[in-house]
Length: 589
Image (cartoon, rainbow, N blue to C red; front, side):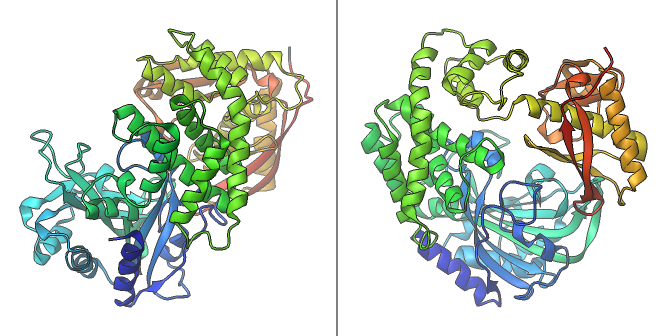
């Protein structure tokens, strides 16, 4: 089955069941600055999942292009991607579990001709937020899936919602294909990463709205939200169980084999590199087609990171690979997706890719020669490579891992701070070749958010906690929980308190400890899903203590005067503050 046939079969199946097809939205969210990219088919539909009537009715279906940055580091195996297409259908307060389970089983077994005995199911096991989903398990048994092929798993496996953690969500039921491989152990089951079971579809029973406070409130309407990846489904249907062997990737891989003079599956590292190059370049082409250009900010930063990581992998295999080779790959990618690029200037996309690669090429060549000189890559060496040759920390980290080493990233950050002290007069404050915004002004804004966070808690109460932030060279944006608009008096109190702490020139100190220890010390930590076993805790004298990745100034007097320029709503129970810095500010010595 071709990709075109699969897409058509999916859409036609649900159109025949009363669904209206909606077009794919841009990868760049509209009117939503809480996230950089559309990462799921349901993302553009959030207002309608919350109860707003959709102009096309209550049954919808689409094939949505998606981009997930969370999977960037996982790319390289047979099925993870940054860019992918998601087939999906929705019931906006219309049909419920029984109808979608019947439809899912019918599409898999009758339309795609997948043998029923190859299908395994997972359901939500239940917890304090929602009950065990026995209803769904019984409905799967009703259509013909025996109980022994139905597994109950927790939230990490069988719960779906927006990447930000709040908004419409609910338990889900996932469908897996048994590849016939041997189990990796006695506890091998659907969801295991060994490759025996491949997830091919997900039915979400969207019953709740998760608030900023972490509460699960029943939605006004019960919704169905499904997701089926085009790439992974094709890989199952053609029997390779490798997304990169499908028509959506294989032409790119073949061209890479030819131009890099290597063979796919010749060894694990070559295969992984070819997958990364193909995936990242494809994602880059789609981003550029949606108006993103390489930069050091927001979506442009992700695009630059993707292109440079792709280039680094290609150059490490064959140093003769150049921007012309990348241009030819762009044309192949565009030819794979004719429906997406009908009105797009393919030459413009190719030129954008070529220009970025040429910029990177001149420094990366010298960097690869330099990195070979070192038997051990320290944090200082990583910074020197970053500053001098434009090596992103992510790339150097991977090169170190290939040598069996782990970079001391605290040392890397320390070198950043030292260099910032020596570069205060630089007009841009940015380091040559850098992909991450560690400029002096961004560092000041970052520390200012900690002061702002604590000041808001002092003025409004401990119900306030951070739910997001965004920093540019021009301003900071800080999102926090609070149920109502702030008064002018409250805003002034917060602003005055922040500036009082800046005037006091309080010392900023960093310690590394376990998350449990950090909490015992009283550190604020509201993004637990981001934290590892060890965390960095930044203290601003005795005033503020937060778990954070940094970077930060050495003392608050370096920040400058804070001016709150705007306060607004950014969702139910959430507020947003914008603030700027005036760098001339008298502080206590």
